[in-house]
Structure formats: structure tokens, C-alpha cells
Image (cartoon, rainbow, N blue to C red; front, side, top):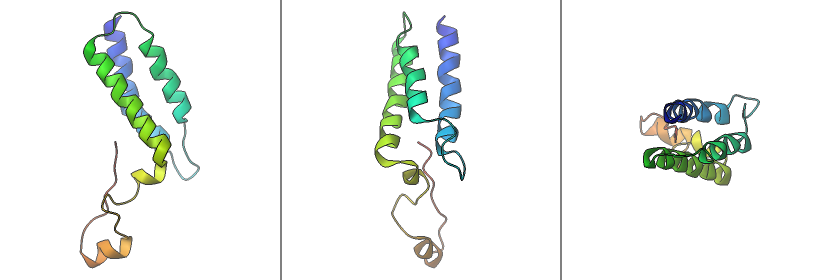
Length: 97
């Protein structure tokens, strides 16, 4: 059972952010969907400390996403505009949680 939970956590870790950030039409799957999946895993018996920590980390990332929205993950970390980056010859920074 723990191996299946490990696989499920790994899967969610890989696909949650791309599905939240989506495309031009918005998120593919909502944060509510991912929160439901994570809470279902939390209800599993005999979770290890590592599994609990991984699930907690994913839930915290969802909280941050819900507070700040998808735009927080597509803008430069230092708040510089595209013109500022060009003037300083630096690349845009994307945060991928």
C-alpha cells in the first residue's frame, strides 16, 4: 500500500503544477481538484513521515497558489518588467514551486 501511495505522490508532484498553470485558457485541473486528491491520500492508513511531509508540502504549495494565483508563477522573482530585464541583459525567471 505504501508503494502505491509513493507512486501517487510522485505522480501528483509531476503533474499538479503544469495542470494548474495550464495554457491560455487557464488551469486544466483546479486547485480544489488537487486538494481533494491530496486529502484522500492523507486519509490512507499508515502513512510514513516522509509521505506526510510530501503531502504537506504539496498542500502548502496549493495554499500559495490559491493566495497569489497563476500570475505569481509567470513573472520575474525580482519584480522587474520585461523592459528592465532586456536593459540588464538577463533572462525572465519563472517559478515552478
